[in-house]
Image (cartoon, rainbow, N blue to C red; front, side, top):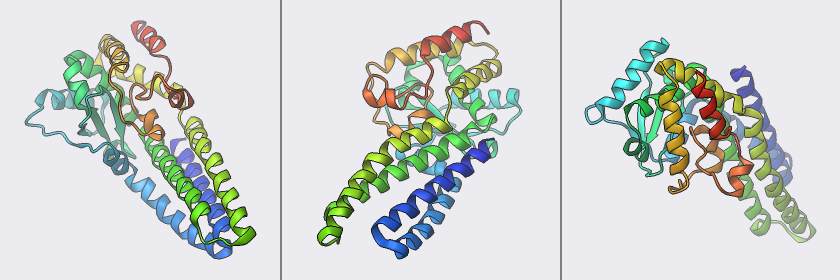
Length: 278
């Protein structure tokens, strides 16, 4: 099912790009956009994990300096019967974590510097188990590709707006192009949110909580971690891209309008209640 949804996302992006190319460049523009869409789709599928890690300047975590983290990852991988994922760290004081990678063989768990400072071993174990459950269930394929594509659409829509304002249109064509460009921005911005909402469901987080609790041997550590992370998010604001908010274990955009628009996370209170019943 995740592979099917990924194909739908890639086709949708191609159609959007070809339409934009046709609006601003006619048949020739549509042809150029088609070639660009093919390249972007190829890159999104194969390199979306690297794109997302690059957004947050994440680097591979040195095993020699963080043996406890690698010990947890290897323990969970053994219990889950899955390959050991790579571990990355993002240089952010905001405590959070996410998983990426198109398959369990290419899985990556990324933690922020802040989460390593905040959580104890059992809590960190619960968080890592949650993220590895995403990898095990191949949630990361659709989650990461959706993030990369949504970011690309937003970038292209932004470029289209400036092309409409300063582009080489003349007379009525210029006015018409400007209006269409501005309309494109108005349409594509919420469309990116809708695509993510359709591709990423809240049930994935509940499923990863449940799977993570079983991998960790208990839901107590993850429940405690979610409580701490929820409280900390009020004090640490993460400079997160809205199109990637669904990747994180707790919403990094909590507390503003954008957060509600990209509300892909279930309420933390309900997640904790469920974990306590496990």
